[in-house]
Structures are given as structure tokens and as C-alpha cells.
Amino acid sequence: MKNFAMIGAAGYIAPRHMKAIKDTGNDLVAALDINDSVGIIDSHFPDADFFTEFERFDRHIDKLRRSKSDRQVSYIAICSPNYLHDSHMRFALRSGADAICEKPLVLNPWNIDGLMDIEKDTGQKVNTILQLRLHPAIIALRDKVQNGPKDRKYEVDLTYITSRGHWYLQSWKGDTKKSGGIATNIGVHFYDMLHFIFGELQDNRVHYCSDTKAAGYLEYEQARVRWFLSIDVNDVPAEVRATGQRTFRSITCDGEDIEFSGGFTDLHTRSYEEILQGRGFGLEENRVAIDTVSHIREATPLGLTGDYHPFLNNL
Image (cartoon, rainbow, N blue to C red):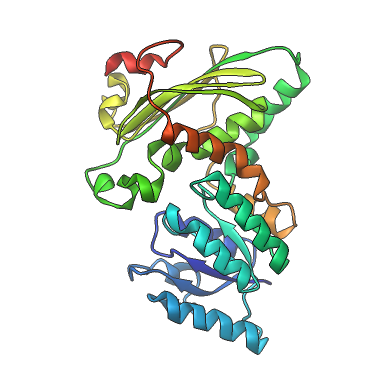
């Protein structure tokens, strides 16, 4: 059994990490969050120590390390706001623990190089949650592409609308400097998935970008991709909204739907299983996706020109 600590225990994604730690037979011994709405811990690890101040958490983790106690931490799960991931991974490595970091790993590609240096200095490892690489439907599509003609380019449309209330733009997620913007915060794992399936990125154009939605065109070795991301409920197709649904997710490949809505429930647990077996996705696996979102963030939108996503016609 391994001991875990967690940074960001009150966040949206933290319960999935708690469940994964428990499902893999391990223990959460310490958790940190500046917010104290963390009663969810009782459902999984009621004996975990909890801190609202980083300095006290730091001291506690260091005390466990130096005492060589049976509660010494081997992994630190990082579920904090995006802009803090880099700092918190550095803390984990320098504390003698491996890091398990939620997406996006970092906001800028040069942060990856700094973390690689710290890995070498400490002998510890950064792992990340690239859960779509473990989804059966995504693996099946990748196998199909890899076993097919090498010179074929698939036509792909990616549409992801996950509506959010007014709170979103008032939180850190609405601050591009902290979240990286819409494409980074809700899209980075899709860009990683596209790279995973279709190979190296060859072209990256942005047609539209606002606080609540973004769209563009990506070309990979074996795919041309039109993408549209949004947190605006008004972008959900009317016939879908009429059923009461506030989300819409669609990926088509050469006109065929790729059904991957199911199978998400246990992907964090699967990710933890792979990490504990030494097969976690590390820093370098994240580079293309981080390069992609960094470019999208800095690009000047082209408007409705070229091969743009059809949802832009509704704006």
C-alpha cells in the first residue's frame, strides 16, 4: 500500500482522485485546500490530515519524509487551479514524492523543460492524467488508423459544449492567466487525444475565440480537424436543449460518429493503475497538447475563412 497526499481537495475533480486512490488499495494521509468544503474526504479517507495553509502542509509532508514513518508520502495528487500545477509538481518532486497531475499539466511548453530538470535532480517522476488515451473507443480508433493506409487523411469534426453558469467567469477559470482560457481548460485532453490517434501536428489555425467559446482548424499527419468548444448553453443544439440536456459532445470521423460518451467513469482509476505499475504518461507525452493550446491562446483569430467549424455559422 502506498501513501498519497493531495493538493486541491475541494476542487471538482478531487473526488475522482480520492476514489482512484481508494480503488487501487492505497491511502490518502494528508490533503490541502484553501477552501474547507472537503467533507467528501470522509467518504473515502476519514483519517486523512487536512490543511488550509500551504506552509503547514509543507511542514507536515517534510516531517513525514524525515521521520521515515509508515505514513511517508510516495505520491502527491495535484488537483489545484491550472496556473498552480507547475509549482505544486515542483513541490512534490522536491518532497521526495512522485506527482500525479490533472490536466492541463502546465500552461506553457517551457514549463515542461524546467520540470524535466527537476525530475533529473530529484529522481522523482511526474505523471499526468491523459485519460482519453485509455478509453476503449479511442484506442480502437487509433488501432484502425495505424493499421490503415499511411497516406490517408481523415476528416474529423470535434464539438464539445459543456455549459456553465455565471459563476464560471467569476472564478479563476474565467481568468485566462490562471486557467489558460477555454481551449486549455476544457479542450487540452481532446487535443492530446487527436495527437494520440492521428500523429504529429502540422497546422494550427484559430477562427474564433472569446471568454466562452473557441473554434479552429488542426491538421495532423492523418487528419484534418475542425473543432468547436463552448461553455455557453445556447450553443447546445435546440433539439438537444429541448430534452433538458445542457451538454453536447460529438466527434465524427469521415462522417461516422465516434461513440465515447460512456466509459469515462473509471478512467481515473485506470490511470492510477497504470501509474502504480510504472506505465504512467509523463512530461514528454504532454508536449504536443501544451504546444497546441499555447499557440491557440496567442493566435489572432482568422474569422470565418477557410475550413471552419459549421457551428460558427450560428454565432
